[in-house]
Image 1 (cartoon, rainbow, N blue to C red):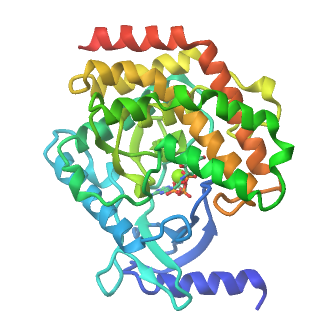
Image 2: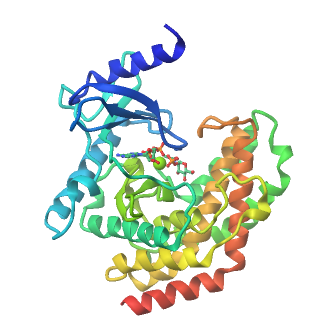
Image 3: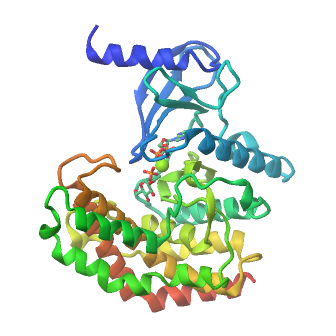
Amino acid sequence: MNENTNAEANLREVLSHFIIEGSISSVRLYGSGHIHDTYAVTNGTPDSPDYLLQRINHNVFKNVPLLMENIELVTRHLRQKLENLPGARPDEEVLTLVPTHAQQSFYQDAEGNFWRVYLLLDGTRSYDIVETPQQAHEGGKAFGKFLALLADLDTNQLHDSIPDFHNVESRLRLFEAALQRNPKDRARQVPQEIAFVQQRAEQMSTICRLGREGRLPLRTTHNDTKFNNVLLDKYDKALCVIDLDTVMPGYVAYDFGDAIRTTVNKAAEDEKDLSKINVDFHLFKAFTEGFLQETCSFLTQEEIVSLPLGATLLPYIMGLRFLTDYIDGDHYYKIHFPEHNLQRARAQFRLVEVLEANMDLLRNTVQETATLCK
Ligand code: ADP
Ligand code: GN1
Ligand code: MG
């Protein structure tokens, strides 16, 4: 048996623990996520569903049973809400977990790896780079509706799957600790990036401060609203928000900001040529309109004002996390070449600069859109 056949045999063995219909014809690596190993499972039996198998990264998610409880809770809540919404299609608009024969939502193998299976939503795709204002608008609606549907879920029922995930003050402390440890002696290669982080540390803590002062409410937020975490159908209509691992209490500016980070920049997240990193305002406006259409009825004025701050904060946090991982020796994100995390950090910091230079335009667009839909 060659290596590939061996790997596929292992994956089929894992799948045998789940309640799978029909017979599987192939299992292949899928998607471009930085955290889990994801496989598309094709069914050879007509009218039987395809599946999506994931090996959950338990270096990142330290308590997988609690993580899966969150996902069960959130998908159940979303499904119930959609079942009562005229015209909604709960089976396509919410992820469906496939249980194991032991009626669990995950399976742990003999080596300690955790696995889960979702129904694969056929005929959908996710975009690493947004191409049209329609896609941006649909993404805005999808992430906005996600917040709206979860607005009545008591945040106390959710576990923190990664504590302090978007807490920039905590991320800055982890960064300083990595600089002190400096295990690969990489800190001296990146003085400009270190200065970039430190110059903005205070200003980037605004959302944290407003939250502490009780001026921004904690809501159930997604916290990983990268544009490729929404599936669009073949007509580019948004269908389903995916990647629910980080659904936790958070501020709405986090979800808006992370989505803007990955919507308005037509260059890759890890673009090497920094001159290609830009902000497309048509995409910004289209996303903002879709997002506020779904959320402006319940967002407070202070939350609306916080949205453009989120748009610079999230690329800053991502750059900071990529740089921390680079200095630390690349333990967190999957990398595809040695300086990948550094290249990602530089691209994100450039995006922060471009967004900062256009802050007035972002603020005006958010404010005008909110006024129109109130
Ligand atoms: P990661 O945390 O590694 O990003 P995701 O859960 O986002 O993992 O899945 C990776 C990719 O797999 C997604 O970007 C999307 O393209 C695809 N995907 C995930 N879930 C489904 C699904 N239920 N149906 C179809 N495609 C999916
Ligand atoms: C990771 O899993 P994925 O690729 O959707 C990361 C996000 C980052 C993103 C950067 C749990 O998301 O926080 O924004 O990479 N997820 C986790 O691309 O750390
Ligand atoms: Mg993802």
